Image 1 (cartoon, rainbow, N blue to C red):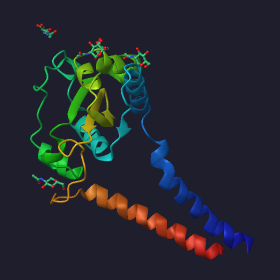
Image 2: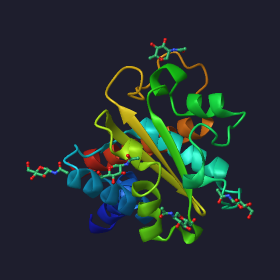
Image 3: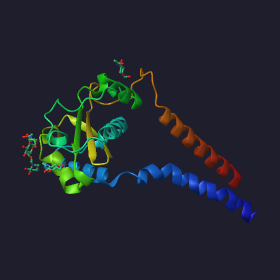
Length: 200
Ligand SMILES: *[C@@H]1O[C@H](CO)[C@@H](O)[C@H](O)[C@H]1NC(C)=O
Ligand SMILES: *[C@@H]1O[C@H](CO)[C@@H](O)[C@H](O)[C@H]1NC(C)=O
Ligand SMILES: *[C@@H]1O[C@H](CO)[C@@H](O)[C@H](O)[C@H]1NC(C)=O
Ligand SMILES: *[C@@H]1O[C@H](CO)[C@@H](O)[C@H](O)[C@H]1NC(C)=O
Ligand SMILES: *[C@@H]1O[C@H](CO)[C@@H](O)[C@H](O)[C@H]1NC(C)=O
């Protein structure tokens, strides 16, 4: 009957919204920066960078680590290459993102701190700083962007085995948070399936 159809249709709608929501909830600053970087590359006749999920994960996790550090002249885009703050838990962060050092070696990690992530400053912090050296490179093909607070982190990947950020098969630890969200997604898929059967 009509009422019981609504009873199933509503959770179905919620499930659809839930599954597609990450697509729409993507951060504006990150989207803007990705577009800006790809326009910059297009202006240099370089290929545009495509999103790499594991690099995106790493960028998010690193932004989380940087979040509580203040913007100073010694951090972010003003950092001398190779002297970026190192995190003791870096191996754990890599593992959480299904990565290991052998697939990230040729990538580039570029943190920047910009108060309120003002879009024009964020883009120039990458295109008009030492980081432009990386953005000018033909070898980079993939990108991941993460932001937290005033921090935005860009991770560049290559299409070689040493820098493609491919999911590592030998990582021992998987993130509990990831398994939880996987379970939630499976639950919603099951709901969808049930609803689909009911409506047949
Ligand atoms: C990009 O390619 C166009 C057409 O081939 C050329 O006119 C332009 O000078 C190139 N720009 C750069 C920065 O190489
Ligand atoms: C950073 O700030 C300190 C103190 O304000 C100053 O002495 C130093 O020269 C600055 N470094 C750069 C690279 O601007
Ligand atoms: C980078 O951002 C800082 C603010 O954190 C700003 O003062 C600086 O001018 C920016 N640098 C570039 C090259 O855009
Ligand atoms: C990257 O390319 C741009 C445009 O050709 C140039 O202005 C900039 O200096 C280059 N960056 C580096 C670090 O060489
Ligand atoms: C890293 O992951 C790759 C791909 O799964 C694997 O071939 C390699 O042995 C791993 N290296 C280390 C040091 O765990």
